[in-house]
Every structure is written in C-alpha cells, then in structure tokens.
Length: 172
Image (cartoon, rainbow, N blue to C red):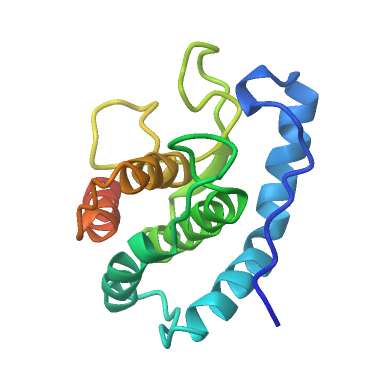
C-alpha cells in the first residue's frame, strides 16, 4: 500500500479562485483531515515513525522530512507533487496538534485581504498570545517554502519543531 497524493480538486492557485470555489476547497480540506493524516501515517509507519500527536513525533518527522522532499524533474528548484502533498498532510497534522493543545484554535478560510500570501487558503486562527486579532498560521505554506529550501540544499533541522513550539506558545 503506497502513499496516495492529495488531489485538491482545483487547477489554479487558491488566491485566484472565486470565493465559492475557495470555500469548496476549504470544505474539502476540513473533511479530508482525518483521511490525509491516515495517509501520512502510512508513510510514517514505513520509516518507523508513529504519529502520536506529540513533540517527540515532530522531532522524528523533522529529521526525516529533508530526505523525502524530491524535486520536480520538469521544474527547476520546485518540489514534486508528492512532496507538496506531504507538506499539505503534515500541515494538517501540525494543525491538529495545535488544536489539541489549544482547543480555541480553529481552521478558517483566509479572506482578510486579496494581497495576503495566504488569501483563500486554510489557516489556523484564534491565537490568544498575540496582539493582532487577525494573526494566523499557514503550516502548509511554510512547509512548502521549507521544501523549496531543502531542494536548494538549505536543510535546517529543527525547523518543524520550532514551528509547532512557536505556534503553541502564541496560541495561549
């Protein structure tokens, strides 16, 4: 049983979608979280990493992540589809860890500003440890940026652990 790549069912960048289509994608994202974490779990089990929603699992993922990211042979310095799918699934996993730590954190469709980098993307909101009431975290986007850096040879072990620790700190 191999890893099944996430199919977002949209063919354009999320920030370019009409609001109704962005909402459909957001609802797909929410309804897919359990299934996608199970898919990620299959992949993790193949390398003896247990997804148990703890920081210990994040440390193991952090060490494994650079080894799984692969370039797209048709596009220089861009991760392939499987790598993007893993970023998506791992972003969901991190989001669910954060929600377990701070039950008031929730997934929302970012509709704040069209110029925002995460416009029309699923983001985590409702952080209490920040002054900006519009503060959010987009784990998927940050993981994809890290995947680009990995392909460029800029591996920074500890990045994913720092991400979740910072998010937990800012959630309270």
